[in-house]
Image (cartoon, rainbow, N blue to C red; front, side, top):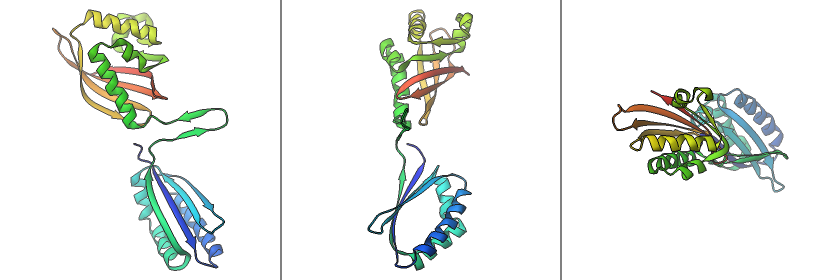
Length: 229
């Protein structure tokens, strides 16, 4: 889940205060623009007099800074004393979203929990030697980068491009190293990529730590990169 904070502020003004309120609100808005973590704000009004403001901050910490900012606190007190007849505030976490600009659609339906699940599925497929399941997690044009690829296939520059190349690489690894397994030690995800660490174990070899990064778009891995520790 993203740490972005969305404030839904619904309010009604007392009679005869809208001009003064709007001037004061603009001053508060200018102050918010200068605060770290401010993302956006938009105001709407209904025919029945209800007002709606949607304000975004990039983290709970940024919102806490704004909540305790002295001029904002003073404005809140003045709002209760002079401007509002009633209001309601809700603080929401942004779980997922999408955007459409008339030509393209960008979906962020891969929240951190979903991306973490993809990494866990990756590890599960590897443990079961489920090559079809492993490749199903990847986009058709995905890439895979590893130091071992560079050693065994120096002409590749260490990069495999496309599922066919990845299938051949992992099938060869499974055939050559039937005892190989990855023991996960940590998984960290945001809404774009997963960072996970594991210990590579092969019979007759000393185990060693490995870090891997999965870049994910629209629910598919578009790039995976391996780093040896």
